[in-house]
Length: 267
Image 1 (cartoon, rainbow, N blue to C red):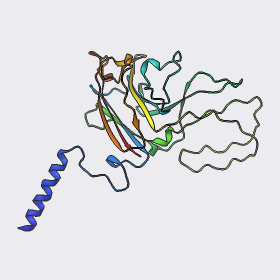
Image 2 (tube, helix red, strand yellow):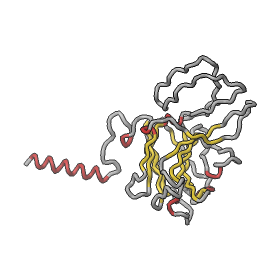
Image 3 (tube, helix red, strand yellow):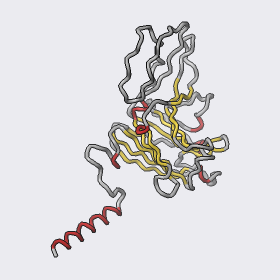
């Protein structure tokens, strides 16, 4: 009788736990939701089922600590991609839905002057450092990216030189691996000064379809023209931050209508 009663109490406790937000507790030594230390999880939600073929889902970060949110209206050469540091793009290419990571860099020209900011694809990382779940809520209205924050530490473009010395190049090393020693003592090109890196990050979500920005995260319903939305976070803190978006009355296609965002961080 005592044994049966114990089993009933255990079953009841599991049911109560399942009614909450989190069914299983965090594992020892990891962060919220089981994230490994140093990882950030990003959830992108839409009002209608996702369409990775025709819509590009864009996550943009400002990691400089300037406080400026990377608004959609500044994502162009005319505004020199103001407050854009990194961008993750999912879908929109008519084929694969996997995420592509870009860094916005300011190159140095041959005369030593700085050129306009430009996007540079980040490569050379392990699959475990950028994980993608295309249907994380089972409703096809949310995808999740889990990323190693070290990928945001900078991938710098070398400054050009007049007569570079020809020497054997080391084998490219994935991020996080131990690099091989340089096989030559010849002078190397100086890298572009790394961008300012801060613990305070600002972010934004966009959707692009038909060659233009259709929606952007907003709490006022102004979509791509919203310049009031700002929700920075501190990556040195443990957090689970959900946000609901207010979109324009009619978004076409409906799969591009942003309904929410969520960020989970393990310092």
